[in-house]
Length: 306
Image 1: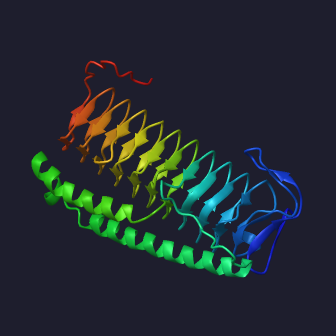
Image 2 (image 1 turned 30 degrees about the vertical axis):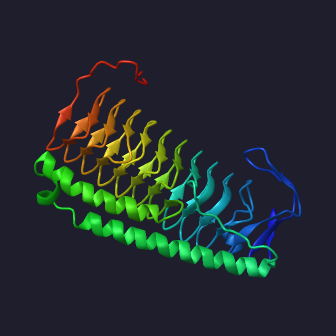
Image 3 (image 1 turned 180 degrees about the vertical axis):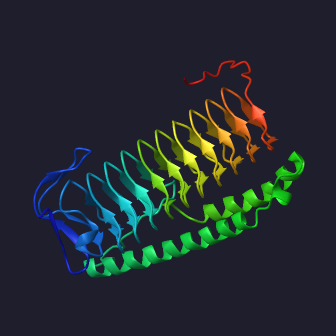
């Protein structure tokens, strides 16, 4: 056995072992909180640090590190994955060398001065409950928005799409800012060397892999992300983003739209069966109804990644 669980849920190392990142956990070191010994594997070198917790049927194994935050419900974290200040819940999977980190005001468990271990355990449970409630409230808002999306309301002329979607985007942006942390939920999966940072949200059945960086963006429903794009916007439905694409904070990719190569969306909407790839940039406009942008403009001083 590598660790034991105290009655208050906090774990303590029984032997010395080395984490995947080279840090040593000495025998006697106190870790975070687990609801059951089944939450954390006794094999491998996985570890939960103080200020982090694993609850419900969640399981952490392999060389995974839970630095801060929480893994809850039926979530799984394994491989060499690192969770630092995020919430991983639902049936979410985080694996490979994935790195999921808190934002500027990320989620973590704070311990007040002069509190006993038992009081801290109670505080951790209360903080996690409050955080999960805020996440569920945010998800309900997002689901309502997605459910009310209609072809007649969002796929008319570009000006109509932009006007109506800008209001919806403000709702998503405002509610997402209410969640102080990074969230992986639903049946979402993050793998490879992907990174989710700055309060990013991976929801639904979305899959993020490769060397993708989700920096504050919202990835929802059945979206597939691969390659090494940098994504800050709202990507939903069955959209596909690959290559070295860039989507800024105020952009939306939805329906069956595809973005690849070194394509860039700047305050733009990509919808229907639209495709943008190579080194193109869509700036403050809507590409829809199977629109296809393929020609490569002059790169200027911006180098396209191959």
